[in-house]
Length: 239
DNA sequence: AACCGCTACAACCGCTTCATA
DNA sequence: GTATGAAGCGGTTGTAGCGGT
Image 1: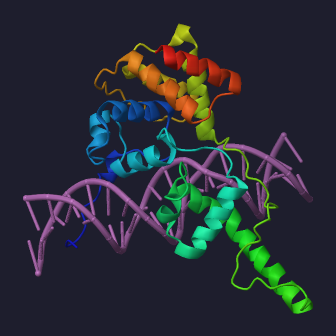
Image 2 (image 1 turned 90 degrees about the vertical axis):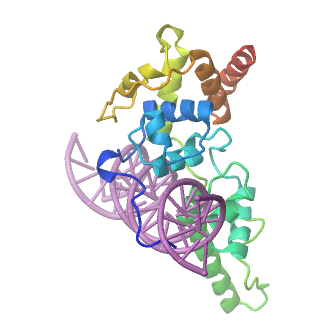
Image 3 (image 1 turned 180 degrees about the horizontal axis):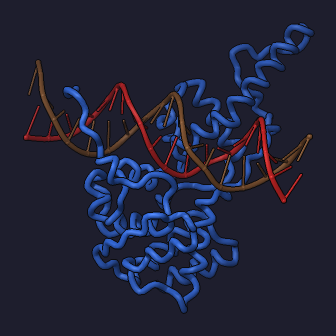
């Protein structure tokens, strides 16, 4: 281990807080074109006033095409519980067994839902075992495999998701399709979140490639209705 | 309508691990 | 073997949204 620690970035020069639509798009289009070999250098190259760590997290947890979105299925929940029993809080290890789910997402689900579920079950287990000896004990067992009584998660309808939806509505309106990625800053009017509208024209991104990628992302992220999805898939094939 | 408390989850922070010179 | 930088990881925080009063 090295002596001391160098800051991962200049904190005074990076933007923090929720990502805006234009930032997302800059990141997506940059990675699509150049990959993400060096996260530290990426923000500068992509024209983002963000820390490399922040970009990495945003990509891995939200923008990556293979991220599965939406509610966890009872099967996934059971898997998490069982894996947690085996691995403890090693979220990345658990995530590796759940394709499309991120460690951050699993951690959140555990802390907000599953942990409580375990507590309730433990409590019930304790009560039943102390009140009756005829009830079979499941000592050391977290869960009842038939249990699906966990309150279902709210759909991922966060503000961030709404931003992405707004973006797609915008993009699909052909009359207002931006001519290049350089013009994305004005999309922030959709999110009302951007307070530092910077104007750093980046490498020109081919509109065609961008559209293709974004359509693909929309499908992958499940941001479409079935009908829309069909349309987009057709469009994607045509592209 | 306004306030409050709670929940969910995106994002940040700092430590650890890994790769490499 | 050691120093260093970058990436990965897990804990924690911030805040939007929602329901209850």
